[in-house]
Image 1 (cartoon, rainbow, N blue to C red):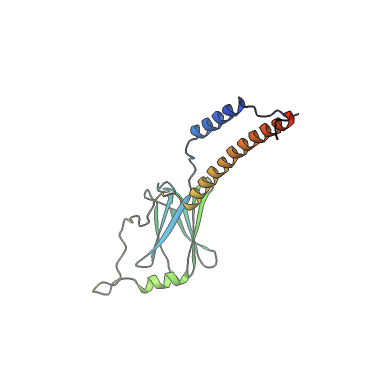
Image 2: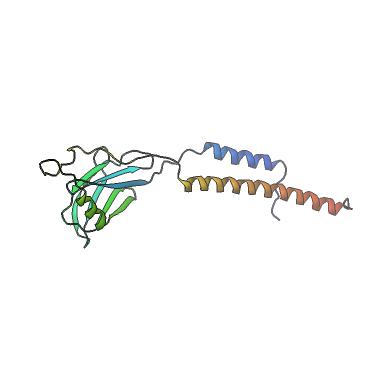
Amino acid sequence: MPRRITPLRLPALFAVLLATLLAARDVQAHRLDAQVFLLPSRKVQVEGWFSGGDAAKGAKVQVFGAQEQLLTEGQLNEQGVFVFSYGEVAPHAVVISAGAGHRRVLAIAESALEQARAETTIDLQGVAKEASPSPVPLAVRDSGAAVKDVLVGVGFLLALAAFVLSLRNAQKLRALGAAERKGTLN
């Protein structure tokens, strides 16, 4: 017959559970985020960073064309930025690989490239302006809590509350059953 949780074991169980929760550290896993920006002069700026806000420096970047042919490749710089030029206005796919399973694929639609080409700024001499020689990050790299993370936390707290209530109800049912067996119930 399985042993029941006695009143002496219940505080010990809560103490172990509390110690486990308090001893848990922040998880060091992080997600790779990325964004592309269409620049003047048929250039695209790719930025990659981890969910903590750190640049994904050194991550491999590959750019594929419409027929999935490799157009260019390189690495994100110290700021997590990679800039490339495009020739034809066609759909592109940008693949960023930061190792350890961190990978992000971004799609650039043909219509976005066409619109960026039409919006290229022209100076007074009619010459297209070049992008700055040293690209600067443009993306907002906030590390705010995602809605999913908040919902997981709330779900955990509700599950913990349900567990505590089930223990309390089980204890009351055992006491009720014991009282019934003794005949003290009306």
